[in-house]
Length: 516
Image (cartoon, rainbow, N blue to C red; front, side):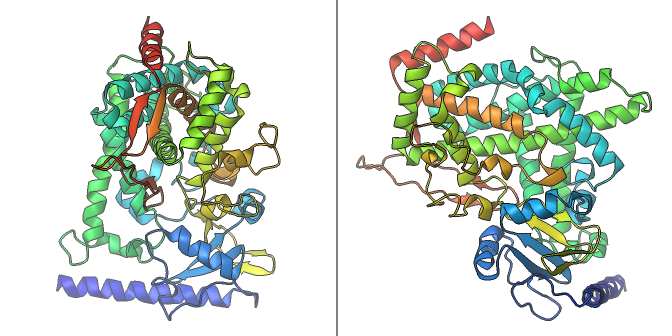
């Protein structure tokens, strides 16, 4: 009897989807939707859009249909924007109606991310949390975190020197340690620390569940009510595991902060927020806001910084000529008796070009988290229905051959003029790497500053080369990517050695001096 009940619910849901399709057609005001691939009855383009590497499918359609395309996922209109010009026209200049998120049944309702700023619905609470994050991570505010960046980067170099085979884990640790230090004042020193694994598991779950069309429950939300044992309820069992990881991420670092774990040399964001309670908020409300803001910063800051540093390492192992030019620039500007810091940045154009190229070459979010339109709209003569998912195709932006010739190649020099200075006429990847409009990542300056310091100090200290086969031949590396809303390189091997004995001694000395 219960099985019949659930089958009836599914049938009703299918009818609702069909009604939504018909309603969307009737309200077009006789204007066409943006061009796109022809879909199947009822399913639309659901079978044409894999849950893996969607940006490559959208890029193919970009070449066929243009800068703005329409995709139908079982009645859910999806508008994909494939150029920075079109993205800015809609997501920035018309942000008033393009800043919401869709319902996100898996991520928000089943996994518990509804208080996470990137996935929160647009409204009063979102604006409050966004304002809190902006206060802590605006460009001027990031400078006060530079001592934290310096301390953990020096520890990173020492960890790599001692255990070079675990370089990827050490980079992950550094990313987690920096953001946990700043947000909660927690001092994380081991690559095996549970806070590092916690963030990794939680973010992988969120990344998988956020892919448009990946789970049928997004199209038929009532499916979220089916029992865990029901056939086809695998998504519910996955969501349960991922919710446990989210809950750990949301609660445990904050509890460690409250319990007085030894912290950093600056006041943490959590401490600042709890000391500055607005008159219209209770302590409980402020505590909830603090947990959400800091957990958001921890999750997003850990993942983007870690993945970008992994892509940097891969690029260096693939391109010794890039390392050589960077070594020459750093040696000329910094010398060999100290490590680079933020005062050197303006004198290191090629290193800055490497930072930009890392962000461009393999964007961590090749597709933006979908925006949701809150009103019917007309753009370039096309009808965009209310409730559409609107996606910025960051991959297409970063691999546009008009702005970036040979876009698949890692070429930092594309950002330089003939005389070696940063070229202001080349499109800056920062305009696309961290989202768009009102949904742009508040921590973008924080992440970019941390990436600069890690890259410059690693280039100063180490040579990175590909692994070698048994007969001593270098093994060619390729960028093999694991798919999701957030992408990362599949774990790879490389050889990391200090550039010289003097470089190794400098690493030890710098760590000791900073700890004194």
